[in-house]
Image (cartoon, rainbow, N blue to C red; front, side, top):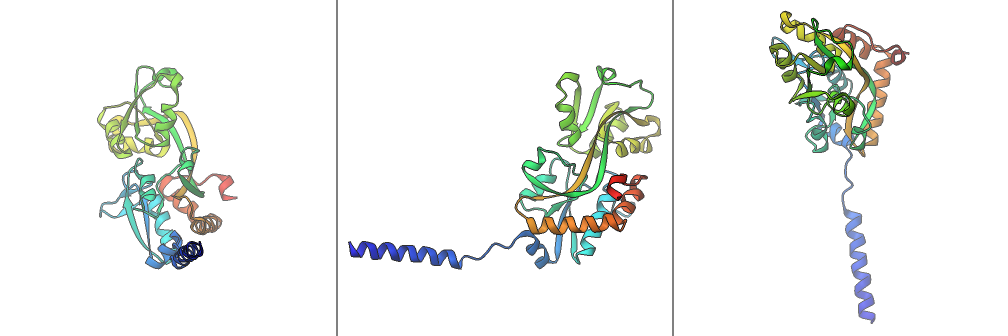
Length: 264
């Protein structure tokens, strides 16, 4: 009996020792700062938020927000190119550290990732050919609405069971715009900014916003359980809202200022 008690005590002591010497997992903020690099998931095919210029350099409002963040934190920036559907998986699998990519705050997404304070907003509409007489949902009865798969527009329209909408889903916003420009669809559900961009690519097919969908808050996305990174992100956003830098970026690419309630 004494031997059994001694053996049990020895095993317990060994287990406690092993637990004590296990290295403490560095949180994501520590990992980012130690690497001196931040990997940001950003869609570079969704103008004017993310796109490539004539020199094949990344540009756009989300791109400049990411660049400002990296600069302020003294970090090298690596863009992890993404689509609407792969933004969240990128951070969940550790491929990217954070998301800055027109990521709307929704209750469903908040179940799997955390959101920072909002840094911008996104007005979503149903946009159709300017020549079409579309004023209400009933006018869409015989029309197909194109959306980018996995976006808030896709989710919002899919949940409108009473509207009897015909929805065409595309892999990303760029493919959706191509479908509109080429005549595959005459209506799309996307941001008001993208709707205005369609006519630029093909003046013969000018689109305009017809039916408002919703205004979404845009925030930085990160995996759950990273409170220190969240705190640092929120402090950075608050400072750059206050000093006007985030508003200047938004106005530069979207032509309007951030909402008054954001600018104080």
